[in-house]
Amino acid sequence: MTKMPGRPGTSGGLVLRTGQFVFAAACICAMASASGFTNYTAFCYLIASMGLQALWSLGLACLDCYALILKRDLQQAFLMSLFVVGDWVAAILSFAAACSAGGVVVLFERDVYFCRKDPHLPCGKFEVATAFAFLSCACSAASALVMFWLLASL
Image (cartoon, rainbow, N blue to C red; front, side):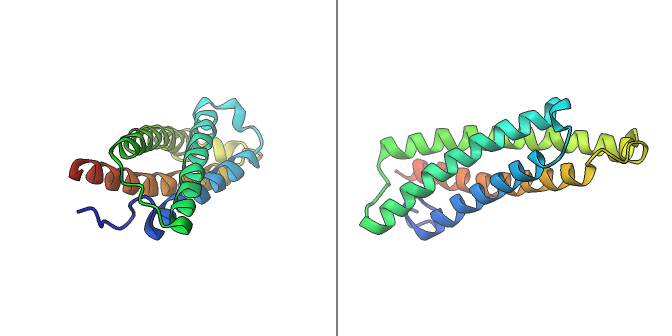
């Protein structure tokens, strides 16, 4: 069980962390380029959550690079418990933010038709940012499950 793909200190773990970072950064860039996103709390929460996700995943990606270069094993009980808690907190926060932003996007597009009524509202950018947030959540959830499994197997 300790040879799971995606565990810390392996190329699979580095790919998961890089995916989390890239999608979170793309979400932040897409949302920051949309004018008026600060008027909606869900979008501000999305930016904050994706910022935390990007920092967490970048830090762990650097740790994975360090472990790969020096061929270190990161499967120590203390480190694994820190990774599990951090991954689960980041995954839950980013999923909640993505869901709230998705709800606002659906509200704007299909329920109250804000996007049709106000052509200056960048609904397309809101949608793209929300899609990137869900992709980051998918990578984060995969990583969190791997970490939980690894901690349980120690």
